[in-house]
Image 1 (cartoon, rainbow, N blue to C red):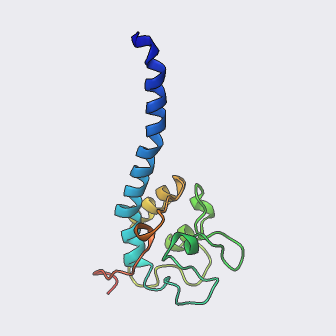
Image 2 (cartoon, helix red, strand yellow; image 1 turned 45 degrees about the horizontal axis):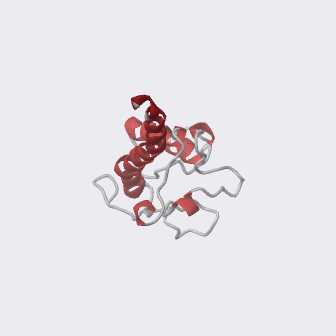
Length: 139
């Protein structure tokens, strides 16, 4: 009798696993990625510049391509994401980000790289809408 329910147990477990993954990925975005983008990037990248400049306010605008056709954020490939080459200050672009004296920390850059490697999950709706935040480094 118990053997009849074992396949059902596997089906229930398989169906609930992606939800936990989505929840964990959303939590990571909300607690790690969103604060860094809001405090260090959104002051300039908020849609006030004409397209095709990077607008990080929403998922739709953040995942667009640059004028040269490169992706600002390419899920699963941080090395091909312009966002990463800009914050690492390793590219040839004259305006490496952020353009203040204070760069992102190695931990913050690593977190952004990890987020992109993991697929760059960005929630829809208000949770995924960014608003510029002031910080001690970026008043």
